[in-house]
Image (tube, rainbow, N blue to C red; front, top):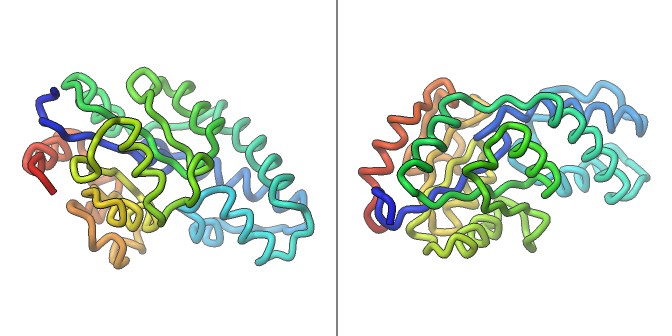
Length: 231
């Protein structure tokens, strides 16, 4: 057993472990442009932060009147994203330090993401995070994406952990809501600063309003140590 007792840690990927939103935005912008929707803005992209790629595309079809099917659009966007992700994805330095700190103490860890399995694998392998994060759940593998709790509950199942013994790290409101619905504590690190006051983040055990600027591995570890008892 780790030094944190029965505690397990589940990480969201995009915007939490890695700064992948610029790549997702660019992949989305290119895809929409290809299908006749120019000038997709970063502000428009922000509404989809934390929502699975499949659900994002389903919304696009309705919002922009796209005639192409979800599967076709998904394939195009994922292909463009994978090209960008493999070329350059930045891990937040303090997040890498946190993963390494937990790994050194034998804390069970998982990744639960709205991205496709291929995208998750590409990022984890290209950044070297796969050395420590081997348990991975994509929203494609469960019935419902965030804010439903399915991805987090499946991650806990694969870790052999009780939901009440799991702490989730999340940057987006759907993920914070999913963690709460799963009965898990949450460290919230808002990617979109304007969302720090959202009701979903109010359920977090630890809310870092300043986002990644405010996150440090040591402070997060200290909070885990204090919260290692039952939920």
